[in-house]
Length: 94
Length: 351
Image (cartoon, rainbow over all chains, first blue to last red; front, side, top):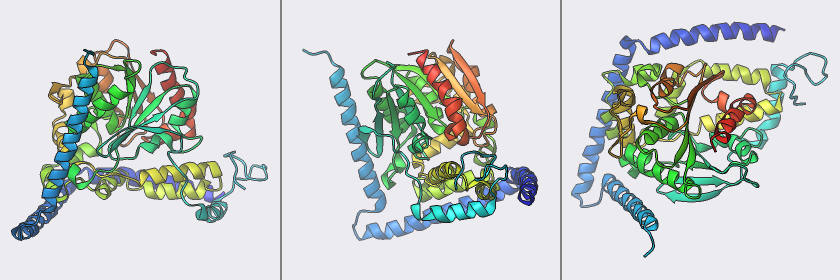
């Protein structure tokens, strides 16, 4: 009984808070600065990564990005081969 | 001690177990760990890069046209196969459908270069052709972002698609709720995010979903204290939580186009979206169409899902609005009584 009453109170609080939070989280006054902060953090990380990568590549070793590009190309080649196999399978027999 | 009757306690005398019984049930349950998921027997029909096509064959096939399920990129496929007794796939197979489901897998660092065309054109196209190999066509169902991907694909490449079902699929991104506001914030630089991380990290995706309803965590805790004494509720709750916390990174190049062209440009509605170079115009959708939206869905609100039916050129089209939220309405016990039979009927009548 007490638990049920408490639950009703919680439910009322939860709905009111959710509505309030939605207003806050869609307010341009909140989103603008939050977006700027996120963008600043991302640009800082990217710049740091570029600096580390540039130093790494001066010693002649492949960077992580080089490896990712190569792997991606291999995956693309595999897909193209599958495409060709499909087309061949659709050709009428000679 | 667990009871399936939601009203009465163990004595059947009308006293409902309370939080203490729930805590005891949780303590007893803890050593068993999380419930198993994705248990319906299947084989892997195809693998390519990280994605797989899973085939679930019925013991006795009652329907000619197979069903291809396309989940979201950023959540695991097993939401559609949460466990014995609460699995949409298990239920469909029991009705005699041959079911195929895409498992998008976990992107590696190199998949930051995967584009929308790679995923929503090449990979999905391959899955459609494999599913339709035997009969020439397949029913296609996309859930959430999977629905957006399948709607765009079907509009551009209608070949081999018997019917299209969009399940809680956002199409109009101007009315996609809080996500629209966030992604349209001018200070949010998508390119900077991709440059920094490559793939958008899953903790960032998960945090943004949690921010859609920050009080949801507390509400779930109260629900758990209220009903964990019910073994069936607890199993379902834990399975859903396992899935909800098993998110996946979003391939970077695909994410960039998703935000710039869909969330910001709303190009599906504008009619200027393309898939692998082909226009994906919704009025050119001709296959039978079923769009399903949920009244309490705070992730894909009704105004975001509804325009698919309004714009599609199909003569046979309908919008079904059900009670419930984005996930609960698809995986709950109630879904087995209403939603799943509605889908089965839609497909059976257009076999």
